[in-house]
Image 1 (cartoon, rainbow, N blue to C red):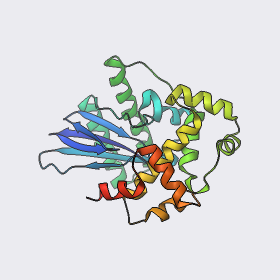
Image 2 (cartoon, one colour):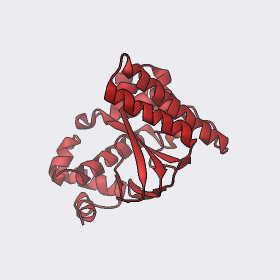
Image 3 (tube, helix red, strand yellow):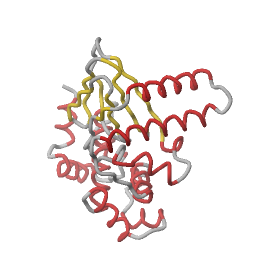
Image 4 (cartoon, one colour):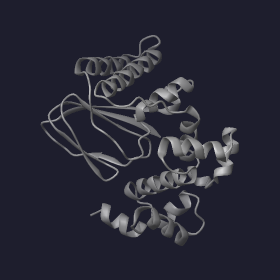
Length: 243
């Protein structure tokens, strides 16, 4: 799964993220976490840059994981926000990243990693400058989110995720309440529902195939689960987004 940063260089860029309309102007960014459904509307007057990276590429230790989610950058649970940043800093780093990836000089991977760090630091500074409260996430909670995203087909229970991460259900519930305002089980349900939306939106999988892909042995049970989470049946949702 990829983490995405969209930066608008000039013009107005209209996007949809998990059904929410987002408008970027020049010098503004928005971050999109893995699994979120997003699209960019064509606009001939807009110029934008898209930076994508995986958790495996960027995160070499817990500090890297925490930086990705610092101040809710990629851990916002559908609360994507538009952030105004220093244009010269962001554009310069994006330009160098492109040059590094195209030329692949000695140790270019290290260079790209460092420049993504600089971009995330600059976005965090912009948020603090405008008065946002500093929020530092716990690496364990972020590993929990990734564990869920990487094991949809297994349909694991909370206790199994706790064992996988070497912790307890109580600890995961504490972190979920702190960082997401909900129980750990409800976090799992939310991530499964988001992945179901993604699978129904992209590709040509049937509702039954999506159910099996997400570890549901009974498509009827999956339909009830999806409707409880989204207020729509998967069939109606699929028809709605394909109109």
